Image (tube, rainbow, N blue to C red; front, side, top):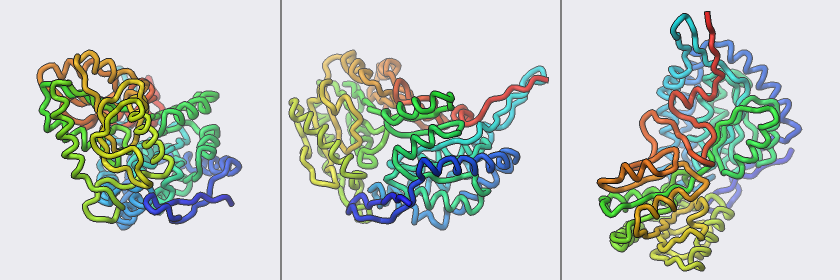
Length: 444
């Protein structure tokens, strides 16, 4: 059997291997999933909720093990890994209840009933940057809606997925939740198979490939396809608050986050002060292995991602950008905290998603210029504006699914949603949970 090797993001030493699910094995997986789904869907929503909640309790004894695997496989510092594992486990009962409420049948006027029925088999294709949390956000609503699920995790984090799924399957009926390991070839075979829906978080290019392969049978899609999030800092902004947010957002998870601040447009009248304070704060960040104390920026997930960030920095400096902190020639596996200014529209730092700990700054003279450049992107996941009077008006003009005014994006019971090519469908919130179900209207 072909195998996939999991590597330590810091040392690049092999951690373990898992068996790859080949294209030839997919039909048998689908057959088992279909049989299990029929039985699973026959249970009541309450029964499914109870079983899922009990299954997540089996994660509690392995919470620390999950956190360590997250740190090892993708490089996340241990503090953040414990937040991801702990948050997923501790919120499971609440999350299951929220989903169940959203999927409960509704009685409308004149005796009409609105039902949320299973779709069938859902393929969940999850990313490496939040290997537990992102898989969970797609997997749980799919299960509670009465679907069976085949999880295809990132090939960078197979061990996290193994422990996650094997723990849940101590309670879940056989075949309801299955794993398919492998690279994009496995993913393509799964998408092309006899499934009913694909829930995906990942790159825009992979999303387009999934959409093309799902088109012949018009399979349901929910996809979050990355971001290149802009931040506008107006002259009226609280500079210290803006600085704190810009650095924290750009460096979170070593910059490997879909809503990381990728481009900062700051009013030229306050640009020098803003840059000085950004550099001072960025210097305080500690880079190192996941198990070292006080580390808050770990290694990038793999050499390919490391090289991608370097190439963007080198492109920027070659075109006239100025490095205020750091360099463009870091050895693997780390990218040190980097601050660069003078970003222009022709630079890859402005055009592309970076996914590294880089604060990329560009001063502007007129607010209209900042808004135009913020919107000049195929991405539209998140955007942020910091300012006093007039900030709301600026926010209204930003082309993004989520916009934060003097704060980050998202929060509350709002959906996680992208605009333009950053999203197709959405998840989270009652409306998002219902995308994993077939709406059916019964008129009596």
